[in-house]
Amino acid sequence: MNKNFYDYSILTDNKLAVGWIDNRHRIDDLLMKGIAQNLTEIWTEEIVRVYKCPVYIDKDIDKLLNIAADNDQKFLLLLAMGNHLEGEKGDFIFQIIDYLKDNNLDDITVIGHLLDRNDKWFELHNQSILINIEWWKNAGKPYYGNPISENVSMPILSRSDENWHDEYTPHWIQSTNDHKIYNGLCNGHNILEKDLQTKNKIYSWGDKFRQSKNYYYPTSDIKINTVLENIATTDTNKFFVANTETWPNKLTHCYDFLATPAAGLSPLIYAFLCKLKEHNTICIYDISYPAIEYQKKINSTTLDLTDIYNSAQFANKKTPVACPAANTEYNWQKMQNQINFLLKDGLTEFYYSIWPTLNIKYLHIDLLNIDDTARFVRQIQLDLKYGFLHLSNIFRYKNNGILNSKRVLHSYEMHLYKKLASFFPNKIYTKNEEKNEELIDDIIINSKNIDVYSNMKMLPWVNND
Image (cartoon, rainbow, N blue to C red; front, side):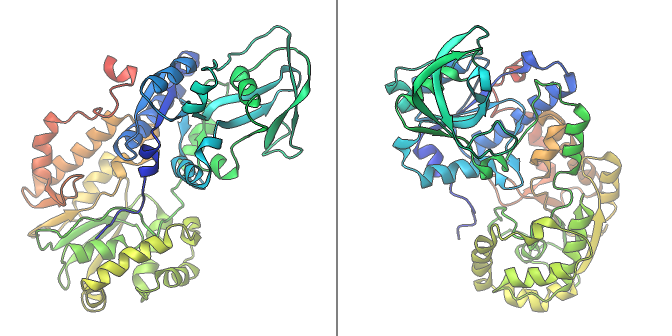
């Protein structure tokens, strides 16, 4: 049974690398600099561990282009530090995957954020740029082009009448046969000019790309409160019914206790995989009140497991708390396909005979809060035989990592394990990356040999810690 939802192979098949533009020397606010570093850590681990793409980092875009070329990469995705590659429309990398699938790769040269700077010619903003390294080499390895303040003769460009927002974000630019004197040049001027010599139009990122990431502009004078408010409200009012986690294969033990986040059908699925018996206990916890309220409705609704989309939509109508993500169709069919596999293994019988008898507790907690960790431990019955702790991606969750470094998140995770192991020695298991289940007592022992930065050795501050 293939339980993976996504195929990232197009990234490695087409040798895509990621180049972080190290802009820390231009960030004045120390908190903003820390957020930029944390975001870079979060996404570097994801890019290396999940997407299997190489990652480089340097202040100089031209150096990053040459590093990619020297390593025989075909595409380089340049990202300025301060990028959060997740937004209203999902993950930015997923949009890159679709873009590579939907376009002739030879036609892709340069795409990014185009800005009309009026008397200073056009800018290719360095927050995110995709460059075809094969094209770049064939074009003579043109340098990127840093800002220039003096007057320069450059081609007059035509541009789309439409803007993505404001009046300076054209959908495309196009060269004309005329030149004029401009009062300066902006970022990316040379590579844009070179690209316009080899193609008719250059396009900018469309809405899907723009809405699948957040850039916090760490080098600007943006108010830090604005960033913190954005972080505080992101995702705490959402609920993902069609959860995209990879489930474990058959578990070894028959568990009598399960702790799991409010995550759509995950409580049911993990209860089934854990082989819970009648009247066993599930603790469904979450940081989000709407998620817990929606989970209650899902659990109290008799679902048609062969048609979870319509069943869950019905439950959503009965929910008094707004859950924006509950209405999305994203991943529904993939989730249904996975459920169909479990139906063959006996999920239907479990759902009608065991599931209604289970003792379900709901707990609103934040596992990154030490006091909440103690409350969580108190929910577990003292006489359990074996308990399974499903943590989902809480300690790898992107938004948790914005204000916490990888090392801090790891310390929170170990604190939870140690607390549980002290009360329930050799009784609590959790899902492991390489294994289906692992005793948390063993995780604590093995943690002494774990390098939490193993996928981030290229980041300069990691090596300086």
